[in-house]
Length: 384
Image 1 (cartoon, rainbow, N blue to C red):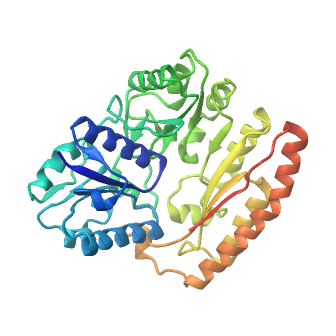
Image 2: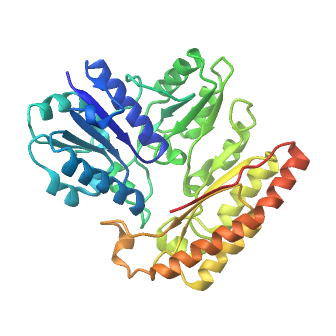
């Protein structure tokens, strides 16, 4: 038996992986401690999306290596694939690299590193993350519906780590949701790398899944996680229709990434701003008061000042309730990493300017929703 310290980073799906890892190691007879001093094994469940997070994780690894030399180390999540070259220098006896598709191997890996073995499991395999033990300490239950995606965005390292789309059978997802409803959960997140392409590899889509989920009896709401507009528009009318069901939270996360068609083409996003606006306008027409969340990258290598102004104009026009603003930072082995980067000062300046424009729309959004829907809109700005 070993005592484990578990450190989680990243998206909703990755935190859910962390909960699964915790459930698996407890089921295997190990213990979990919130104090790294007490631990025999440190598990870092990593994220590789943004440089700021990756740098933070490398600092954690260095801290563990330098200050807790007696601890065994398991690095899992996206970094064992996306940052494999940089992580290999940490490989030694008692250290393991486990990809996100191999987390069910972690209990046995704990035993192996405790025996001072060196382990590398970074092969991509179909590992369905449903029906597994899970230590869920939140009031919201997350249910993963797929791994990987069907897009090839030029800036994204997640694709390198998670690979092509592997959708989980909808009957298994329905059973998982039923389980949480029976346990009294009122809010359930459906999450994956990209919910919008769910089911394409199985011959159905997200709407087909939602139609079955809302048939589950009980008092609960489902929140649908992020979806690429490229795929959302393929079944838009049916999605808007199923959103009429009161069991589906009136929230849509559609990352636009840029307000410029040229930059979107360079990013290989495969939709136009006109198509994106059509999605938003149709949702708002049928579901007034819906919360629209988006992501925007400022300072993409090919983004000109004029391109950036197009992004500002889009934010002014569509008045998003939630924006995640990211300053572009090159990720290894991506197409964008081969392009000459913009000066950091320009990227920072554009981030500040976009945040300012977004804040200026806050009072308009809040006033409108308060008057028409008796609600307050929370401003969410994340700058990284």
